[in-house]
Length: 404
Image (cartoon, rainbow, N blue to C red; front, top):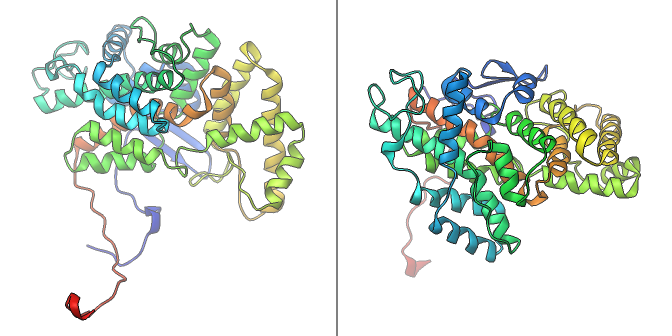
């Protein structure tokens, strides 16, 4: 039955059931596959989080070792993909555009479909075994495509960045975990334990977050029975938009300016007096402080206390406190608490991720959630096809071109 009620932005529409994450915007709770985000972010490796989303349970030690090995074996990209990324860097293409190009091109040298691994909950049991038995060819191809995207995203981003800086790419290492390998490919140096744990906490924190815009786009593509690579590239295009994934960079700009001036109150008042928005505050869903902000604040505190500029972190905390108070004073009818982007900026800056790669690093994490959503959509698929309300002209008659 088609409703005449207009629902702009689909805010009031429920279009899917999911086991992947639950958001309570009123209380500020986020549960990922049954775990409070605070527990998953600080305890898991990224590979464990991905396995959990894909298979709805934590892996055994043996399964985790096999899963890590499988992802690591899919990290490499070939000459064709590197050529695309080199050209993107030379042309000054934005990082998210380069990721879109590289992710799509990575299918040129992806492992063969018969190298796909099975769902560990199927009869083959071994997650590193060839797909056979109850896993059909299409499902096996999906498993392979999902793992390829998750594994290749960091390599694509790091390769593009090295080219953009006039440096040769650093090849992925199969003995390193996902987060450590990404940092090493970006910088060429062995990352510190503190930096790896900081980045891993970030990757776990943002891996999934309900039916956000990019995840919805991935599910829409999947609902047409298109392939997972197309879904991933569509999601990248959506995440590129500044209303979705583009805020941490501007937050870092503000933090640097406040740190330089030493006057957070003056900075905030000047912004608000000019009618400008404070980046890193307020959220479409949460009516209280974003729970991910607390997780990343704690991660940033651990990192800066062990391996970074403690004064910069204290600036961030002072700026947050001042901004929240002044926003409450100026806009008493709205709750504009800290969102995930605020401490994302502080943490990623600290661990060595360049500002220009903040949104692509978001994608490096969120691709795990996208792929899990795509597989979930496949399980009980229905073409996603909302309606629109026509408000255009009626009753027009055609006038030949020579009479217009």
